[in-house]
Length: 110
Length: 114
Image (cartoon, rainbow over all chains, first blue to last red):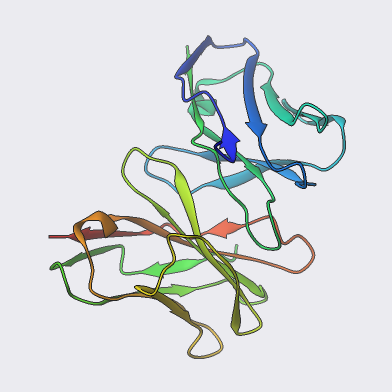
C-alpha cells in the first residue's frame, strides 16, 4: 500500500470556484500533515499545515483532517489562475522524514 | 529573504562517474534534506541530516549515495558510479528547529546521466 495517495488529476475548475484536493495516508502514527504547492519547473513550497482533527483556515485555503479515516484535504476558495500548480500532500512519517504524495495537478481556467 | 542555494543548476555526467551536488542551506537552519524528482514523477525523500549525522534515509539512499557537511555552510550529496536512472532533479532543503516540517527548498540541480 502506498504511503500517501492522491488523485493525480488534472483537476480543472473555473476561476472563482472552490477546488477540493484530497489525500489518504497509510501510517496511522502520522501526527502532522502538510500541503505543499509546486509550480511547474519549480521547487515545492509549504502552504498549509494541520495537526489536529477538524478544519484549519488560512486566507483562501482550508485544510481538513480526519485521522480516524486517515484522510486530509485542501480546499481553495475563489480559485485563481495563479493557483494552477501541483499540490503535494505530506504526512510527517517520522522524525525529519516528510514523504510527499504524487500530487494533484490543479488547473484554474479564467 | 534567506534562501537555499544549490549549485550547479545543471550537471551532465557520464554513466559510472561520480558527482557531487552542493547546497548552502539557510544559515540558522539545523535540519537538512535531499529529495529527488524524476521527470513527471513525485518528489521522493532521500535523506535527512541533523547534528552531523543522518537522521532518516529512504530505501533509495543506498551505498551509492552519501551526504556530508564539510564545513559550517555547505551540505553535499555525493552519488558514486552514476546510473542512467539517477537522472533527476535533486532538491536540497533545510528547516529550523521551531518549525522543522516547514522545508525551504532550493531551486534544484538537474542531473543528466548519459
